[in-house]
Image 1 (tube, rainbow, N blue to C red):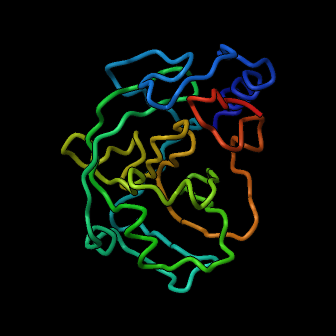
Image 2 (image 1 turned 180 degrees about the vertical axis):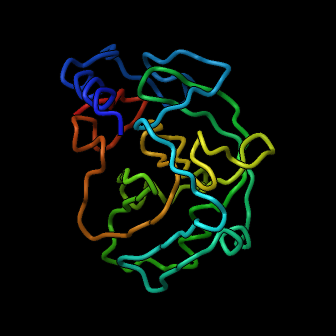
Image 3 (image 1 turned 90 degrees about the horizontal axis):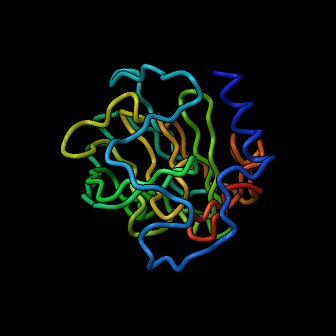
Length: 210
C-alpha cells in the first residue's frame, strides 16, 4: 500500500477538502461539488492485486442461511443483469452512463437468504481493503457485482475480475477485487471509514467525511 497516498487522503478528511457545504436532491444528476469526466480515473491504495481466473474465489458468509464459495465460472453462471448508471468519486469526479454486466445484489440475496438479524454488509477485497454498508443499501435494484464494463471484461486496474457497484454512494464503497461478502449483525467500519471518511457516503448529502 502507498502510505503517503493514504496519509494524504486522511489529511483531506481532517481538512474537509472539497466540501462545498451544500446538498442536493437525488433527482439532480450531478451531486454537489462534483465535476464530470469522460475517462475513468484509476483509484486504489497503491497496488493492483493480480487476481487471475484461477485465483479468484468469492465467499458469501456471515449471518446467512446459505453460504457460498464461488469460482469465477460459478459466479458467472449465476443469473446475469445489465445496467447503466453514473458513478461519483469522493475525489470530486463523476462519470455518466456506464454500462455494466454482472450479478444483481438482489439475485445474490435471494440465494443466500440473510438471517433476520443481519443489518450490515462488509465487503473484503483481495488487497485487504474493506467497505461497509447497511443491508438496505446493498438491497437495491441498481447494485451489482460487476465483471464487465462497456461490453468488455472489467480490467485489473478497475477491480477485475469482479468488483462491487453501489452507484448511489460515493465510489469508495464499491470495493474492487472482491473476495468476500460478509453479512453482519453489527456495523464494522471499513478501510476509509476508519480513517475519517463518512460511514454512509451519500454524494447528494455530500457525506465525504465523518
